[in-house]
Length: 256
Image 1 (cartoon, rainbow, N blue to C red):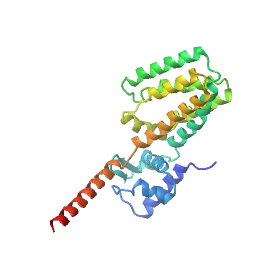
Image 2 (cartoon, rainbow, N blue to C red):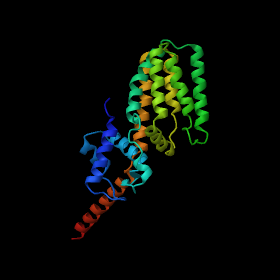
Image 3 (cartoon, helix red, strand yellow):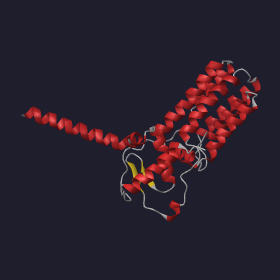
Image 4 (cartoon, rainbow, N blue to C red):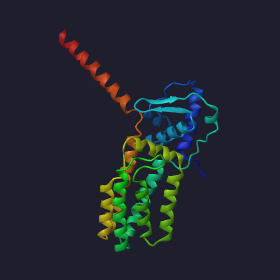
């Protein structure tokens, strides 16, 4: 079985920390630099960093960067192999559930459409409630929405695949931690995007259903990436500092 990419990167990062003599409190290189160093995408770096954070090896300071953590005995025993990463999982859902929606558009019944609209209304109600410790508001209804579409295909293999993807999503510590960060940013399931999927299914249009589902899950990937941006504030500070320095030089030149 191939080792997950984020796990490989996380292991490499640990070796890098040890070989370069990083001490607790030292800041690791920026995400972009690490992505170039290990020839992987920034989402993969982000998954590796979250795995290291769960294992207690680094501390993530939003808006600043990633810092080496004080070693703890219990942290050493924690595995970095934390199931499939959230970006890979959502990208897989995008490909598979897009086709599932296209098939469902030709098979879904009026009764299932009524049930689907009821789930969206439930999602609206859940989005308005306080976030629980165990689940993002709206996610119970969100899962029900996607599973109903899978069942509407009348294809047991497709139903099983979608069910397995959600099972992996629910049991993954890495994905749970990612969504916890997204949750803290106030992100909830998009009602408009779910209505767009519903409307395409209601119209019996496979192409529109596929597009609506892919658009929705693409937005989920983008939202995860934005919500877990580690160095945004620090980058903004550096830009402001650089702009001020450039302005000061211009002013000094004008006075000469």
